[in-house]
Length: 536
Image 1 (cartoon, rainbow, N blue to C red):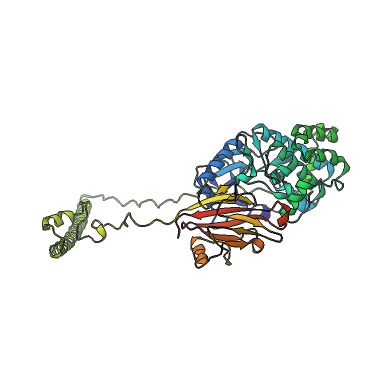
Image 2: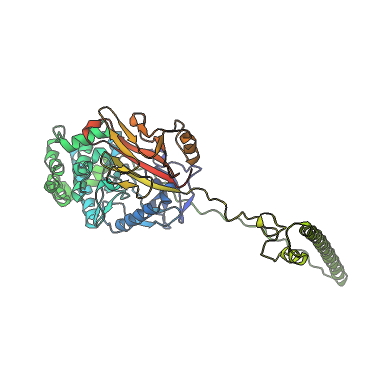
């Protein structure tokens, strides 16, 4: 991806021109958490601005996690990480800014040129391992290290995206519903929902290095369940790797986390293999060969030019006594005319108001509601605040505000990246994640297929275009009575409407579905859920 038109996409109609004072110059991409834009600091340094999706921004729990991630990322300082510049978890919308890294991701570089030569892989491993030292030193586990999260700058790799990282002191089990990583680059403990530690990132480092050397994932492609099964139950086939790389990658991929190499050991091993090149600083030359020609970064967007009104024309000043007297007479005549017009309009207004007042008095007098005329007159005054019997709907005269008792539309509550497997369940009511099977929604797998089932709620899958809303879910749930939906008809992006007996309506959007091997024991679904309370 060396073409500037591929790297820097123009802003679309739904993109904001400005985020927290940063003027956006181009769109860089989009992910599960939101969109990423190119902007610049006041000094002209390019930065990447990540803006959170609105449905996530409305979720207080997500904001709390996002705030925690910001504090964790602010502690990370390293030559091979993209430094966090600024962020605001309470912004509208929430956002963060990191230094922009000019270069393709490792995934893009492999797709363009194929596998990397051994020296480039060694430099890659050393740089990423050093980045992990900085990340782990700040008490963070990345949890989603993969080729698309490694950018190749001209002077070495940069590890990015701590959006789903795990700060120390926070539960590390994947069943919590936090994002768990990418199946092809998970460690066995991630796939088995066991404890995630810094050694988990080392396993991902080994997989990433193998991908760079082979041009394809070490554990192969295919359905996520198949890949995860191989990661958990089989040893990797390293025979396709260059012999020089096999020892260190094998140590990174040890099944037991305690037996894996540490990032410091990876750095030292790579330096030994690079020999004199490591001390001579030969890395940049290797990276220039891998990344290709540098793409020109768009210039900062200038501030809008202020709009100036035309100056008032200076009227010629009278010179002689006669001309000054004529000007004064003209001014007096204009003033008198304007004053007379204003008095006329005021008189008409008072006349209209008085006529309307008399009509109100007449209606009040003929009304069956008791009360003296004087009371109606005082309450009809524009300064009165109490309603009278002559005011329909109990409003004060001239008021157009609706009644405070008007029903409010149901508020959407977002629950992003929920994990559902054959051991847990989801509930429409909070807490939505359960570690037992007593929730409203369960994943049930049999010999040939998996399905979503519920003892309480009705389930329906819209057959229209993506973008289901509360109204469309209401429509599709009208007359529905099924409590089961087979997942053979669902895929990533599929939308499922669910109606709870309480009146709550939920929209489940599948992000990852791994149900191709129901008997493997690793079937799961990751989905975003939006719930409208009392929406029936």
